[in-house]
Amino acid sequence: MPSRTSDVLVIGGGIIGLVTAWRAAQQGLATAVLDPEPGGGAARVAAGMLAAVTELHYGEQTLLALNLESARRYPDFAAELTEATGQDLGYRRCGTLAVALDSDDRAGLRELHAFQQRSGLASEWLSGRECRRLEPMLAPGVRGGLRVDGDHQIDPRRLAAALLTACERAGVEFHRTPAERLDVVRDRAAGATAADGTALAAERVVLAAGSMSGRLAGVPAAALPPVRPVKGQVVRLTVPGPLAPFLSRTVRAVVRGSHVYLVPRENGDLVIGATSEEMGWDTTVTAGGVYELLRDAHELVPGITELPLTETLAGLRPGSPDNAPLLGPSALDGLLLATGHHRNGVLLTPVTGDVLAHVLATGDLPELARTFTPARFGAAVLTEQPV
Ligand code: GLY
Image 1 (cartoon, rainbow, N blue to C red):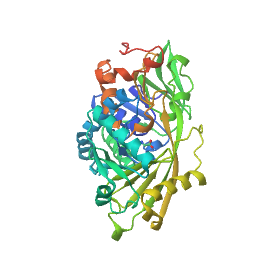
Image 2 (image 1 turned 180 degrees about the horizontal axis):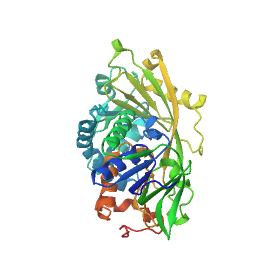
Image 3 (image 1 turned 120 degrees about the vertical axis):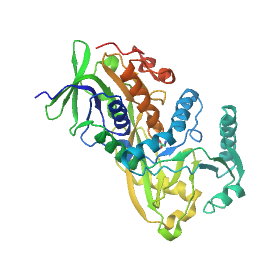
Image 4 (image 1 turned 30 degrees about the vertical axis):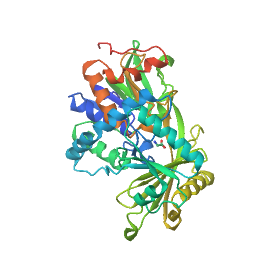
């Protein structure tokens, strides 16, 4: 049976779908979200590093600009969300230390430092001794490191919970059931049919279903985002009260070619992540994945072996062909995309909400998001067609 028509239907209630819905509702648009478990998704697994500078990769300078802009917006975004909900987001401006364990790692980190400096980014080279003065739990063998005071962290579970509350308070309607298919009428997205058979009509639809975005039935091939699941396993330890602070900031390294990071939360959680695996839809936590994370983290911070292991989890990043998100109108009229955030979903949450709200309210994709139009992977448009 059809329910009332929304201005905007967001398919997917992870942090990207929720921030889009919240911002759309703030624009006065009647907004609905379709998701069996809003507030879930990859944010349940993510460590929540806001690491525009330490996660800089060659070939991703365009993405860097968007990452930095979102990092710049984070303080105001977090303050507004906390004000709207009364909820603490675990936003910690604690900085990050990227360290090297041997001479090869150190050469790699030196190169990253030079690249950061050429890109105008703030980071400071430290000797091994200086690293250990900052973080006394580091292994004695640490050979040097990069101090990046601007790379912070947020607790993604708290972020998701707060966005859910903010949406509810802003009048967003929730349909807690999976999406069955996109509904298309006369070559235009017209809503979606839920798994329980409910038809949800909408003037515009935003597809923000993370790694699932690439396989929603009913989306024409030309508009289907080229998004794939990239598995990430994480381990959580707990630092008992009297031991805190075990680490005062995020510590990370590349060990034997794999990235490992340790993110200490104020509540005593220590999140260790993450594998990066092309395993399709598999979300099994494997002995090998956990072993490698603990082995690499132990080389950086030997004392972790004393801590209780409280959780192991695997999630799916929505990977895109260039590791950057797809934002804005798709090749199908009325269908917009907010997906493909890959390693940067938590970092890009503020800017994604602003970009999608702008395009939904005005029809135009803002300048800073034009490089991230779905058009770069095929036919699409920069401007919403009138209804
Ligand atoms: N940005 C951290 C990760 O994707 O593992």
